[in-house]
Amino acid sequence: MNNTLHALSSGDGPDVLLLHGLFGRGSNLRGVARALQSEFTVHCIDLPDHGRSMWLESASLGAYAECLVSWMDDMNIDCSHILGHSLGGKVAMQLALSWPERVDKLVVADVAPVAYESNHDVVMTALETVAANGCASRAEAEAILREAIADHAVVEYLLMGLTRLGEFYGWRFHLKGLKGGYGRFREPPTGVGSYLRPTLFLRGATSDYVRPQHEPEIRRQFPNSSVITLEEAGHWLHIDQPKRFNSAVAAFLA
Image (tube, rainbow, N blue to C red):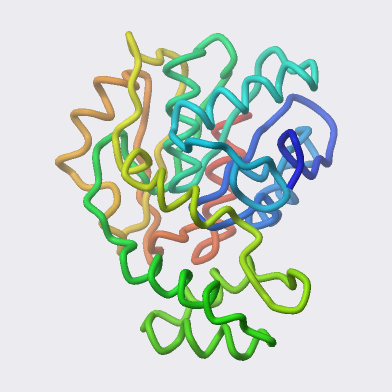
């Protein structure tokens, strides 16, 4: 943890900020970065309360977007393309609605500008159990997660946030802060007006995060947008269909 945002930057060209999902970190999107870095300067950013970035007293879409704008100021980035997946997509939308002049083109991966019901209760409880049990090995933590969470892909994703903290293993992300902010993360991004610059929504065909009934709200807040569905892809569409995902992003940004 530090007093700013941690980022891994690579490539040369116009700036692109990559924003990961809940409980993740910037390196989750390194595959996307590698596909873009021949034409762009790509920044894989750890969102606040995640990875090696600062922890906030109160987590929200607005607070995260404000931290990103401050980081852009520190890096002398006046305007950037932004790509966000899941929670990162909501933060990207919030930044574009609040500071439209700072976002050149926007890519939102498998999330819509709408309110979502709570669907992480089991995950939160399992993460808290790992933190409370004082796991002396990764295997102990993994066993707790697998007992509670049926989806092995989710378990593997969460384990990437596990790290040794002194004698025991714990979470690199700010679990208490993320739990406290979870209700605010589920809210839609807000803004006075719409974001009028080009926007691409990518959704997984087998995911229910971006549904047909969400499209009117997408068009209202992002009128210069298009929606592309990636077949044989779920919520982690950049993992399920990396070539199609990266090609769609590169073509859009070009």
